[in-house]
Length: 275
Image (cartoon, rainbow, N blue to C red; front, side):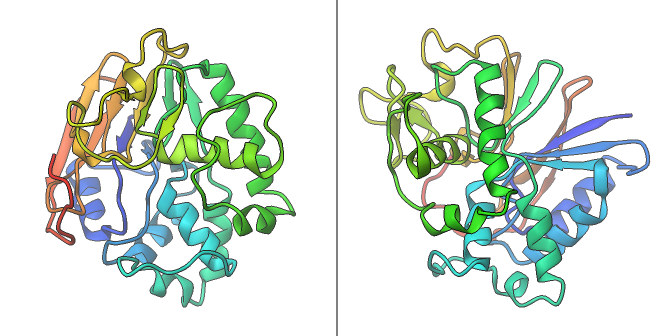
C-alpha cells in the first residue's frame, strides 16, 4: 500500500485524473491524502467531489477555506464571489449527498508522525492540542447545529488564541487557524492579509512553521493553501500547493519514501502573487 499526499485541487478534475494515472493509483491498495481546497475557481469542482466521494476510505481529505465557503453557500450564508465556480455543485442533482460528504471531512488528520491540515497550526499548540481542537470543531460541523456556525463563520477575529474563548469566537479561531493561517507573530497573533512568499512579508510576521519554539516542531506537517511557497519536502514539513490553478503543477508526495510526482496544469486563473 502506498499513501500519496496531493496538493490543492480547486476543481482541477482533469489534472487530478492525469496525476492519478501517473502514480498508477489503485483504490484497492493505495490511499490518497488531500490537503483541502478540493473545490472552487477551477473548471470542474463537481467532478472532483464525485470522484473523491466514490473512492470511499481510499481518500482522506481535510477541509480548506474554499471547501468551507461552498458549505456555507449551500446553507444560504456568505456571498458568491466573482471568482467562484461553484454553481454546478450547487445545482447538481446529487448536491445534498456531496455537501453531506464534504461537511463530514476532517479539519486535521494524524497518522504516525504526519499531521495533515490545510493551512497550519498556531505556534503555541502541540500536535495533541491541534487534534483536540480539530475534533471540537468537527463535532459542530458534523452535528445538528452546523448551520449556526456557517451563519457566523466569516470574519478575521479572533486574531490571538486564548483557551478561555468560547462560542462562535472559539470555533472561528480554530477553523481560521486550520484553514487560513500563513503568517503569525512570535506570540501567535494571526496576520490574514499577506499571501506572498516568505521574505516579502512585513516586519514582525513569520511563517507559522518558522516561529522559534513552536510546540509542534517534532511533527511533520502536510499542508496546502500557500501557493507562493512552492513545493517544500523537508523533514518537518511537506507543502503541496504548487499552483495547479495558476498553470503550474499538481503535485503528489508518496509518504513512504518521500518521492514526488507532478503533472503540468493548464492556467485557469492568473496569479495575483507569483511564487
